[in-house]
Length: 428
Ligand SMILES: [Zn+2]
Image 1 (spheres, protein in one colour):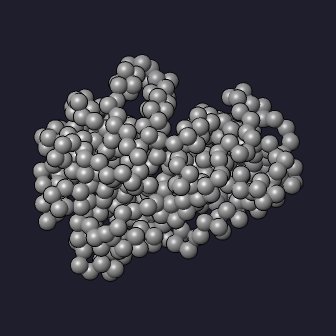
Image 2 (cartoon, helix red, strand yellow):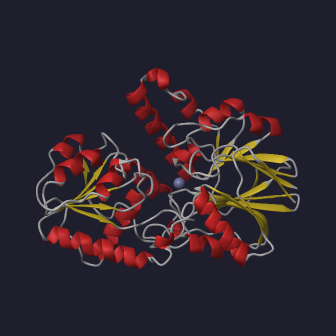
Image 3 (cartoon, protein in one colour):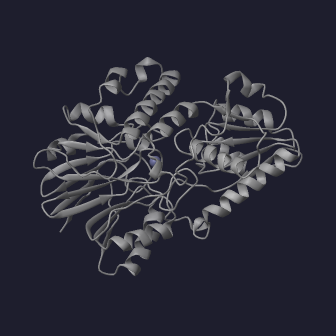
């Protein structure tokens, strides 16, 4: 018997935390916080089940941001992750504390610096099976193709097999080669659903996106303009730097200065250090191949003159962010462009700007790169694993419903589940 329970959000993309029990051996997968509210899941159910290990899929805060709080209720419980996830999570949690402190003061901090530094990490490489405790489940981390260090988690115990995809991207991108899911058959697949309701990516191929971005960059820069690429430090910044490196290798954009702002430089250094060369699409490509200049905060209000590319956070132009300030500076000049290269939440200034370009102002463009798999790729990969049960998580309800219908058609003998928070699934 495998028992599954979503401790955090399941029918949205909020805080991820999944409690799984394989023949009563309880393991917690992820402990995130909600990206907007900061809400975290309670450790009570994990305590009651006697969870003896946490496995962290990756460093994004919606998967890692509740970890210090969760561990208050699970003292002496080790946190298994790749070295990349350990390093990037440390940075993400420190940045999170800094932003909360700036907004709410010291009294509003969700956890302490000591708790962040004292996380009981147990680092494991990709592809090497390990017992989580003596006589406990065997765990293997599989490259998820999402951000540096990100893993899908295979648990095997007492003849049962469960695979949790975490956030995953299956096809190769510029920097990362794409996910490596384990071979089936499998009893339970816990699968992310981010793009389940997004038909626009179904026929979009990575090379077409890369070509479109390259053409846009060349046309704006050739006209003497400047380009703002709002990026997330954890993931998108690395993909865009790799893209620029490939373009330079092809003899394009060789002499245009590239500025990098915010947290991305530190994330790049860790991503470069902890991404194995066989996890890269181009084994010889490094993130320091393109010389970058640091974008100091003062430069956001007084950008350097002349054609240039600015890789700056936040990816959604959050209030007060460097990218938000730079967008205000670049918008009045029609030679310039703001090119969005990822997801935009409808409640953000980036979303508003993307929908409101105006004549005489800078160009607003969008190239839909994503760190999450296309829904068609998810269905194909799930079918290849021949699971007896599929648990759909990390997606809006419309996304889970589309995937449920597509999977039922493709896998008529598989049971598909759309759990609500705290609902317990008994999976025979
Ligand atoms: Zn993620």
